[in-house]
Amino acid sequence: MILPIYTLGQPVLRKVAEDIPLDYPNLQQLIADMFETCTACDGIGLAAPQIGKPIRVVVIDLDVISEHFPEYKGFRRAFINGHILEFDDTETETIEEGCLSLPGIHENVTRPTRIHVKYFDEELKEHDEWIDGYLARVIQHEFDHIEGKVFTDRISSFRKQMINKKMKALVSGSFNCHYKVKPANRK
Ligand SMILES: [Zn+2]
Image (tube, rainbow, N blue to C red; front, side):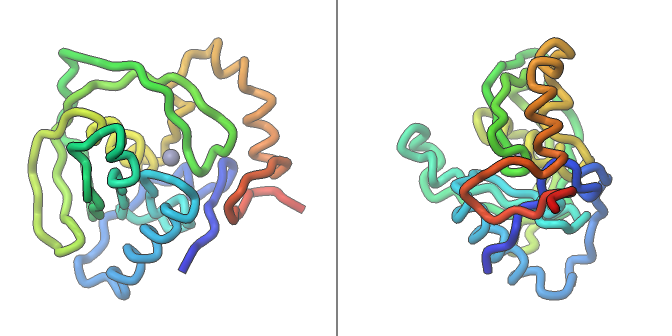
């Protein structure tokens, strides 16, 4: 089932999401719905707060970009109870990001290229590993969501000022996008 995307201004996007018990009701269905929603919106990742749930569940689908990143052919993974344990600050990279919860906004964000994460996958297998490359970038973006953050929190105050009007339009619900959304204040 394709779910509506909660957009900026929705309080759930500002909550620190909670770990879930691994026998969380209908977890597999939730993951399937999140993948389906992500694909329908042309996204590469989706975090549960973006569909209104303050829980630590994230899906990432890099298969859709495998034309440019062949190493991610077939990469579709759920991250349950994910936490970033360490950032390797020796190298950072600046890449333009966008977000299904902030349609129409694209800004450069600087992040470390390597992170130490722990999570359970959709088969409930526990992982504790260092990840680098584009996946590390996408994990940092999605895991920000489960910490109550969005990518525009990480841009300069100058850039924030430049996009202030667009951000206000998002919060007030006066915007268009091609997928189903649940804005905070749309009348
Ligand atoms: Zn996002």
